[in-house]
Length: 189
Image: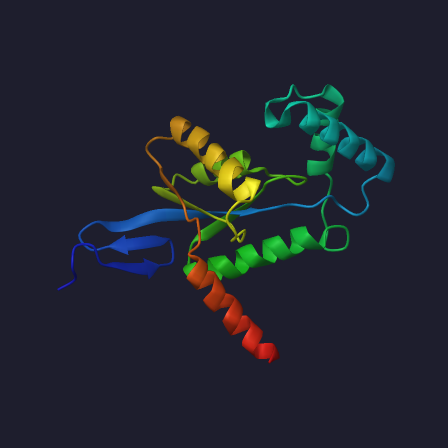
């Protein structure tokens, strides 16, 4: 007899006894990086405007139209392993995570790359899941992306999609982070 809350991983979701398969999708949130072949002058202009906006009011500042234009251009610049190794590594990590969990994984980026977190959540929602698990390899508390921006995007998404159970698999337990790092470090001792 399987207990009511027992679950078994299956390829398309999580099987709960007496409930069947719950279709689950993972949204993996990565930082993002500008592509190396993006025009330097425009990238410099982008960061100058960004710095000015941040000094003048942070995330509540009115968005400069030129900043918005440059941000979209950077985010939608064609990506390859050569011009954005971080993007390529992020996509490879998503593939490994999908193999390890059996769930489809959609990658979203905090900045510099498309899709952004909100769009990644919508891409996942288009698959009609019952549950979306949002995860990030940003493990340390206190970072603006993991601590504030990702939860804010999830809250907005939940308002538009109340029937999809959406959970943020964060924060990480610092003892588990230390154990993970210890295991990795022992390879080099």
